[in-house]
Length: 197
Picture 1 (cartoon, one colour):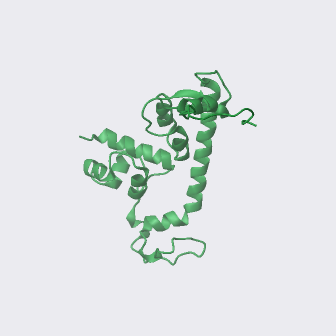
Picture 2 (cartoon, rainbow, N blue to C red; picture 1 turned 30 degrees about the vertical axis):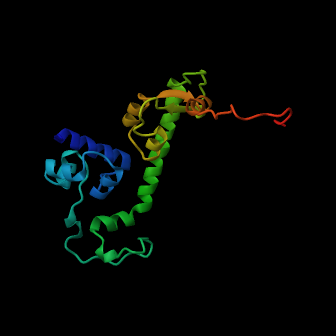
Picture 3 (spheres, rainbow, N blue to C red; picture 1 turned 135 degrees about the horizontal axis):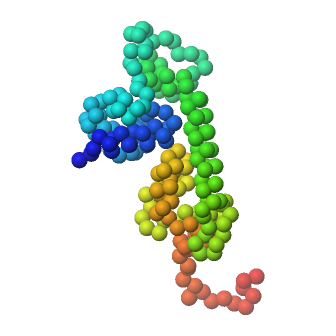
């Protein structure tokens, strides 16, 4: 059975990855567990859950029951969307989309800098001793949950990236390729003198 603590931890993880308090749709897109429906059932609703997690909640009364204002010309929405039919939160999203994208880009850049520094300080190839951070990969000897590169792009927390790194062996790019190499069967190939030229 899912606990309240697990629900709150997942919400905070989503907020950290997004750089903001998640909508239900945003949370579902991240593919985290438990499911949003479980969180709502466990904690008495989406806003109630976010409030308990210490996250900002969306107050539907911010529109004050007023009619929807016309879409500003500078706001882009999908071709199949109707401004008047969007929720208040969706309209807010489209009005602030550029700022949110910039915030996510800054977060990704910060995580990349952190990972480079982490490699520089703590990592070297387990096979050949290569130490230069750009050359180093994280190899999963067992089943892979996430690639480290994908976690960085998706804005996972440093703690979750470190936890995934703990499941890995550090290899340089060359040794990593050799680790995954499946040498071809060359037994039936006959080489003629000078055929390699």
